[in-house]
Length: 433
Image 1: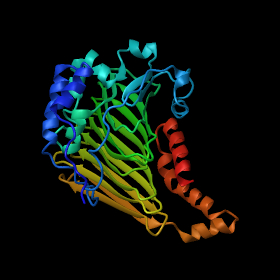
Image 2: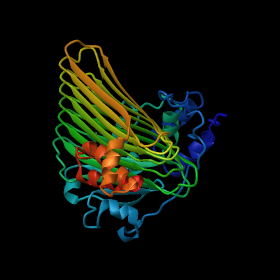
Image 3: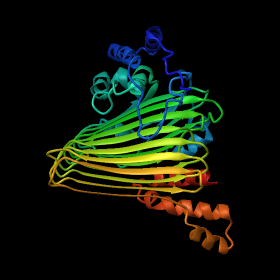
Image 4: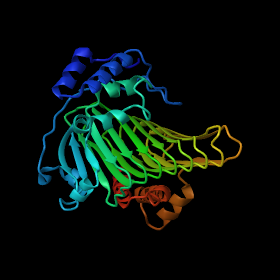
């Protein structure tokens, strides 16, 4: 029997929610428009994954957090951002409420804006309105993008003006409890010839209660800009997750994605980059581990529009127990994108008889003067490797752990951020044990 996907929220609820937060009129109108669209739009249809029984629409919408001093933050959060002295450019959001924020004065002096999205919508209305769900993600794509626009609670807004190169990373931690849904929206807008590194971590505590995650990230890199986006998703088993991370790169711009997707619940994830400008570049690296009865669907897409644009996809996934995942890598070189290049690799390792993995590299080429390639492999753990390790006195569990680390290491080692590498190793270790 299918899950009831009828919406539990009406116009009065959305109006009241928006009014209580004193949102600008344009945002309230957009929420209402999205709510109306959500009534009739279809659910997304991920390839080879049936989500009709997944819960995406039954959830508690609102929860509250409160601002705290650094030493009052949860230990898990402090472990991610370091000491108070180290946490110089960071935003912590608990249940949609910004509870801790710090930004160095010299970063502010260069015109950088970094704040929670609700504050940005009030204080930098024109900028937020320019980027919010206009080009990267549309409110009318499907029921879940419309529902996101109608009910997003908060998120982050990062704006870097022209000719500003930030050497220190910008960090964000989003953590959720109180059985609440996590509707989070991130906008990163980097102007001409500027650069930034952004690192986010998602945490939740509801292993034994059902809820919903609906995340949208929109990244805009103008001409000559560079954005490095690192993320570690570590949401609890009770969360059914729908995640959209999208990017648009201008002329000679670069967007690099370093994604650790370690949610314990069922997940649909879309990571799409449009290489709009000539000479634009993107590189997407993803690692994941599935376990238990978890079902996941991952799509990594790159669209080459500009001439001499380059796109790379590298994905490694490990499936344990009864877990199953679909990995679709799509490279689409559009007509006119001459001299462009696309390359992708998907590899899946299955550790049990009931685990399932499906890797599907897809090349769609509408231009002659280009180069492109792909590779994929799906296989089970090599019994000779296990035999060799166990013959040296290593237990079966420890041998499996070493093989998993070795399988994921080619991706983890290439992650552009040391902080992301460290966090990935920590989460991988917890999952394999």
